[in-house]
Length: 283
Image (spheres, rainbow, N blue to C red):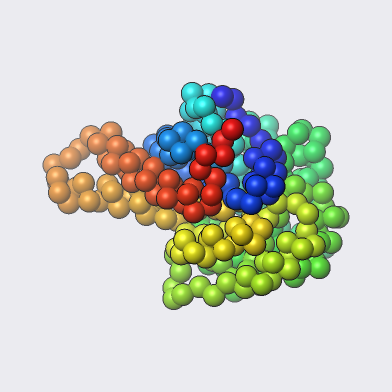
């Protein structure tokens, strides 16, 4: 089917008490692998690219690849700009065919974040494209994005932020981090429950790579409607290629590396979809 926006799938997730898995993809093989997992489990799915991935392959290229693969799928597929770094990039993504965008103004102060998020949300509203924003700072490093420390989201600020910006989903900081964790993450789950009480729009959890299944599941129960996975997909894809080369060092065909990478990513994504509870929710 044609690409869909994230609006309906996240609203259904919020009402149904599950979360949609959102998976960062870097190439055609990862796109195919994620959609294959969604097809097998009959799950709605969001595919994401970050600004550095877009710089590597361009918005138009990823939009064309994902649209072509989504057209062959029987499940809803959404293409999302993850951590959009500017108003201009978010608008370019919409024009290129992305069906959901994020504007990340979390490096700004509260009023600055509101200003840029509202600006993108206004464009999204006019274009019929949902807009995610972030309040608070998720620590760690992902691509060119780096935060030295976590600043967890304040519930009342989250309420005001959502109301004033007109965004359609909100990424919150509760102690998660981008990349793999050093040590055991300590999540402020009670804060998440408090945010859910005062914010009506779907909530998003970033930095889920490396979290236990139990932590992800508990966050979903407390109101998370979208869970982002990135680093662990890259590790699975690359790890499968390294394993093949170790076993068969004479391998030279990129397709052979792609096949094992795809298989590894598909299995990983299927497991994460089951934890999110979105399997069987495509219809």
